Amino acid sequence: AAAPAPEPETIGEVRIEESDNRVRCYFPGKPSEATRKMLKGRGFRWSPTEGAWQRHASTGAWWDAREVAKTLLPPAPFVPVFIAEAAE
Image (cartoon, rainbow, N blue to C red; front, side):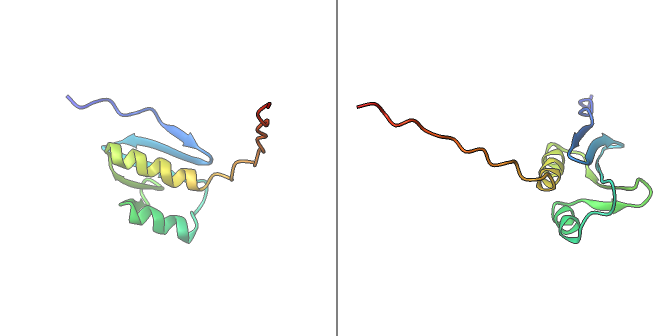
């Protein structure tokens, strides 16, 4: 028997879920041209019926979906780290 589909995930504003043997990425609006190019380069295709970018479900599809979503997150704030000088 096939393994159960992973639970849906949300990274930033992108929802990732699996159904009908497809991994689907739902965006709040039309992704930028660069994001669409990245999706296509990773095997995702637009499905007007589903209103999502999708490809056949696999571990790799989940990985790629997460990686694309992470590129859309705002950069983490810079937090300086001070290293104490060793006592002599």
